[in-house]
Amino acid sequence: MQLLQETIRPSADLRNHYSEISKHCRENKEAVIITVNGRGDTVSLAYEEYKRMKARIELLEILAEAEDDAAHGRVASMQETFDDLRILLKGESQ
Image 1 (cartoon, one colour):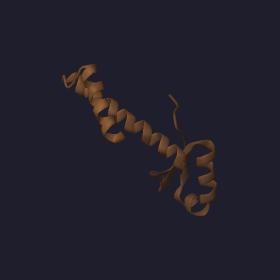
Image 2 (image 1 turned 120 degrees about the vertical axis):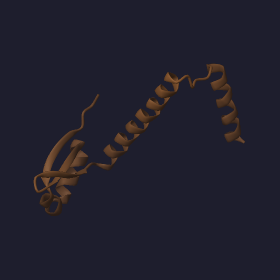
Image 3 (image 1 turned 30 degrees about the vertical axis):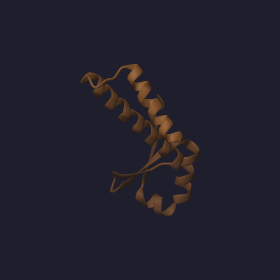
Image 4 (image 1 turned 180 degrees about the vertical axis):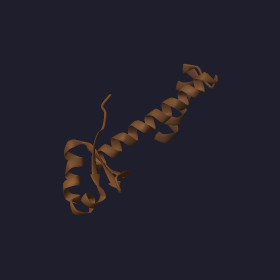
């Protein structure tokens, strides 16, 4: 598992050094935590890193739903599942 590195910068830096912070996020794949009065306020993150993080979160949500379905007996046989997929795929190809 890859941990996201973080840097902390005051809000004045965001105002005065946006280009530098943006470049830092993109090149180092790091999040920059922006503080106001010494407390975390917002996070700046490269767009590509944001998309990767969002995709991982969405996958984890799907897996959590699947785990909950299995725990509560909401499952189908493999044959049923593949039959349903075939029907869906045939409908999309038409």
